[in-house]
Image 1 (cartoon, rainbow, N blue to C red):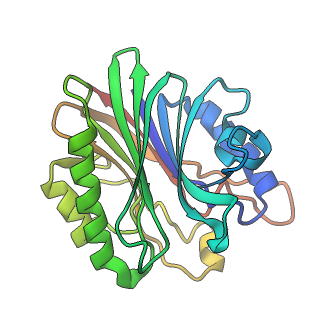
Image 2: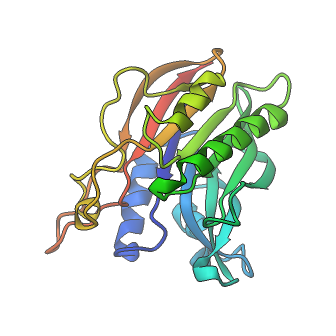
Length: 258
């Protein structure tokens, strides 16, 4: 089973030119499940393709879409930013769980879906944690909250749960070590192939950010084997004066055997 995660960077940069790059990579990867972060949707018109980035990405592919709002854009209603799950297989369940910290930082949420794959029901969780460096204690609260909900919501008899997202925390952080100790396996293993927020990307370099690995595919328990993990959404369009990248993040894709 192929699983992927990708922070799409909402509509920053040249979104109309970034969108076809994302769609082309989605077609190339053909994942069974992909979790998206920083997805914009007009919650007053949730079925409108033109006002939902997840639906725009999935247009014409046959992928099912589940969306979870997290925060109103610029503090106003209407357009919200959140997380999404796309899958060619039916999505049987959709729950939205607000994460702790909305009183001190931008609100975040956890999206839970149960995807009906040909080999069994797959619990899929997608999240995007607080981003500010000084919010590490808050991220620790958030990952503890996420871990508890993964255990509480994953049905008995289902496939091992996968947790996807932008955790804004590097592998040696307290936050990621907490999840490791809680029984989540990092699909990257001991030899990750690169950074997911990389100075090689023009958008990262323009922002003056340093390269880091903050996007993850995590598998709950030991009943799944990672066959291959690699970066995705890494190829820019260099046909114009300035390169256009799919996002300021690179994605992660892994093949799992259960």
